Length: 328
Image (cartoon, rainbow, N blue to C red):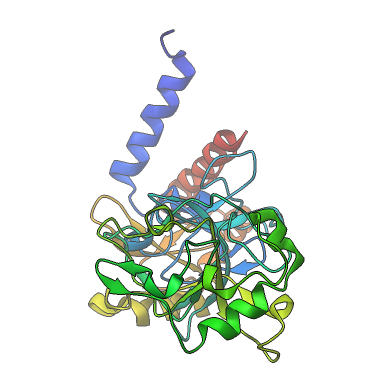
């Protein structure tokens, strides 16, 4: 491996000095944004390292196709529609399609989840990490192309198929022409299908499709206004996220004040103190009121301004330049 260039060493030294001696100037200001693609990102979630709550990183990040995680523009108001908020677990990376902050739920769309229009054989297991504050919510899993009769399908010795709603939902889904992708005929017998609700995860935190012998699954977050028309169902896996971490030390109230001032909530490693990331590049311990005028004040200030204030603002400008250099 070639030794680092002197300029790289100088950059690392400057970053070290900034982090050690100027902790209020965090690199979070380079990356934190309140938008990722079409999704509004609010506390406790963040778009990258140092953003949102540390309890939800790196489970939830903003990614750009073909780029690196956390490669987000902040403060410029430009957000590529191709940016995607994703949930990462030990079984894969899943796009987040919606978040309900009032209900503390989010919905993910696994790429190989089946729907009425597209079904995928040999779908991999889907799972959650036990260490992350997520659990299954109100989704209905429909397991497809399972060994018949599914009425005897069991997990850990417990029968899992819903005998009441199974035939109705399975019958509707098996009318979709896409069942041919699973090697099933149109209007296949419903005893090859299992409605698993409420679903539970195994010891590894997985929905073990292979262990159950099923080839595919659909997850229905909502049946919508026409429950018997699977082409109108809202497909996705609904997850509930933990609320205990949000209320610790009154962070919910502090973050609400930050967001009202057009700031983005974040945290300052290594002790993960709360910070409010402002568009000016300043990190505040409270909110961004007045903070976003600092750079304007710097350019229009006169000789009666304090030297210390100018020095601090010069450091802020240097940090912004370093952030710009890193993105290139």
